[in-house]
Amino acid sequence: MLKILTVLLVLVFSHSGILQARTFTKVSYPCSVVLHPVKDIPNAKGTTLITKVKKPYTSSPTSPVRERKGVGIYADWLPLPSSFGLYDQYEGFAQIKGEISWRFKLYLVKENAPRWFGGNPWVGKIDEISAELPVNTSVEVRLSNSKTNKLGPVILQNTLHGCHN
Image (cartoon, rainbow, N blue to C red; front, top):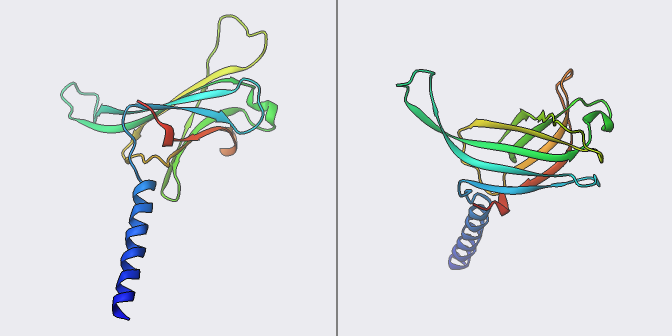
């Protein structure tokens, strides 16, 4: 009986270790992934760049540096946020589910020539992430209301499983 119980415990713990190893495989930096629309929005797509950045602690030229991870988003052919309701901006949202998340504002890129068919590019980044980003990290473009600070529904999304360098 003890042998059977030992074998079962070894199987269960080794299987959960394999499962956890797959879930927490780290991203190879730098890499990028395409963000796909959740709703049917013609031409809407985005991309995210995941990279390591070296940042000084202070503005002094002799300041030591610290390494952080950066998540940058370029999203194009997005309608104005107000077309979805009471929203006035887009935000980038990255999360390691069940652990931590980051929000950052995306900025509308003003173009010299107006587009005849609609859609606007939005860009933004965060470069203060100290955590290692596993491949199950999700990156999203979401609607947001700056007055209420409420985050709205997802417009574009993907995980870092397909992150290519």
